[in-house]
Structure formats: C-alpha cells, structure tokens
Length: 260
Image (tube, rainbow, N blue to C red; front, top):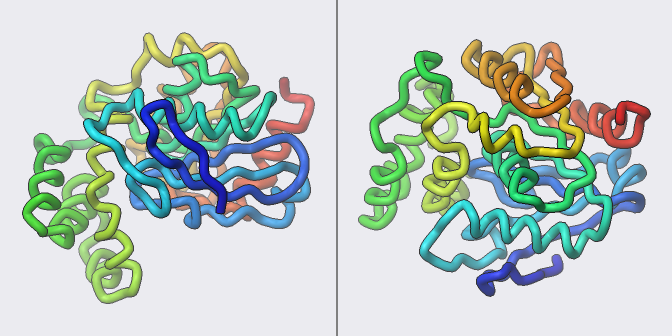
C-alpha cells in the first residue's frame, strides 16, 4: 500500500502492480481497492493503480462531502500514475471517471462500465435515498442502511439479500455504508448529464453487460450517444458484476489497440 494526499488533505491509499502504461481503476459502491484484483494479463500490459475512494478502506475522509472532492482525489492518483494514464471505471466509479474527464483530469482514454445514471421512466427509486441512508448510519443502523440500499436502490432479489446477510461480506458492507450517499451524489438523479459528458475530449469506450437489466442497457446507450465519438460495446453473458478476467482483454484491446 502507498498513499498520496488530495487537495483538501485527505489521505488516499492505493496499490500499484505491473509494468507498462498506467491504468487507474475507479470502483463503484460498496467497493474498496481490493474489490478489483488485476489479472496477470492486465499487470503484464499496464501498471494498474487501484485506490480506496475517500471514506473507504485505508483512505481517510474530510467533510463536507462534494463530488468535486472525489474528482480531486482521482486527480491526485493520476498525478502519481503519471502522464498518459488510462481509466477504467465501474458503476458509480464509471460516472466519477467521466465526471473527472469532463472537469479536465488528464486521462489518455476512459472505459466506463454501466455508469448508473437514472433515465426518467426507466425504473423507480425510493424518494431521497441519500438522506435516508445518512440518517440510518448516523443513528447506528448500518445494517438497515445496507438492506435499504439493496432492496430500494439496487432492487436486488430478496433471496440474494438474505444470503448476503448470512455471509462474512455483510459486516464489510456495513463498514462503508456511510459512503453510499457519495455514490448517489456522483450519479445524480437527473438522468444522463448531457452537457457535462459532452465536454469530454478523450476517447471513451462505454461498456454494458448483455445480461444486465433493460434500464442499464438503455442508460449505457444514452451515455454513449452524448459523449463525442464514444464507442459502445455490450459484452454478452455479463451483468453489472463483470469480473476482471472478462473485462481485462477488452481494456487491453481498447487502450493498447489501434482503436484511437
């Protein structure tokens, strides 16, 4: 583990592995840097940087929260990684990477997997999930916050949630439940941020899973449509939880191929 400091003094922990051009991995909700384990293929092709977003893992946190602070965190990692850094973002991490690129963080190219923007009419969300989660966490009801996220925000099957509650994974989810409103703030609730994404000037590959829910497919298509010259790729037989061994070859082909 290594650390750097963001603009507001927050300590951001990261790991690096491999050799080659830098690839920064930006994880989504309920994930820390250990959630994405680079494959041997990725570390042979890239120097992979995985980092703990603020408030998670070994990174610290500094209030009040704002998406701009997370952009500064990511910029600090890119500064460590060096010129020509690529970015792979998953879920809210994809939305964060795209937001950072629109704000001028100097990526060479971005691959964004299923940024969970909300398109009106695509699906219904619980009203004001962020404040509700914050209230649950502040009152010591972290388990309730995790359950609320799973049932009302993610809308996972009840049987799957029950299995998770009985697994060792549940306490780990509870420990970072306070960061869930951060993910909501990154993605917003006003649909695909057309004006923001239109500012991106680097090559972007927007990726979705062929087995993901229909609303995710609609969102992925809408995201690719508003980013200048973005490419769209749907990976068959995959859903929102695409593993590194599946997405790794896609990243290598996009970043290191002749596609841009």
